[in-house]
Image 1: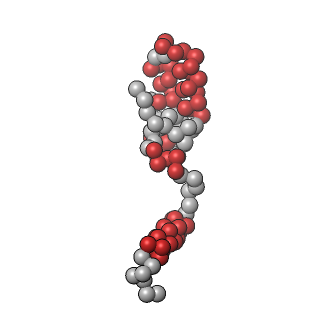
Image 2: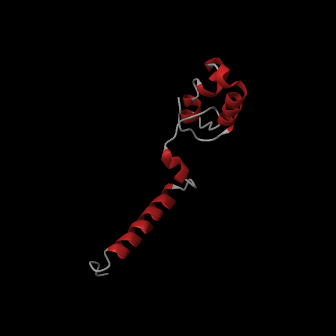
Image 3: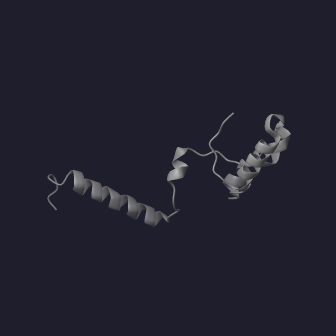
Length: 92
């Protein structure tokens, strides 16, 4: 099976095991990195606890702004788009 995961120490260990064991790899060999890790990751914030799924958008995240910074950024981008695309409609 394939799965998109965020790179961390646990994933690096998985890759080493996969390269080393090849076709002989068994679930027991990788259980530490994949079994029961979500509570530690999602509830405790231990991002290195194991391999965890992520979507394509994860590659587009470059920072973790505060809520204020995020809203300000969204508003500035929206204002720029509106002024650029709807310049003839705007009066102010």
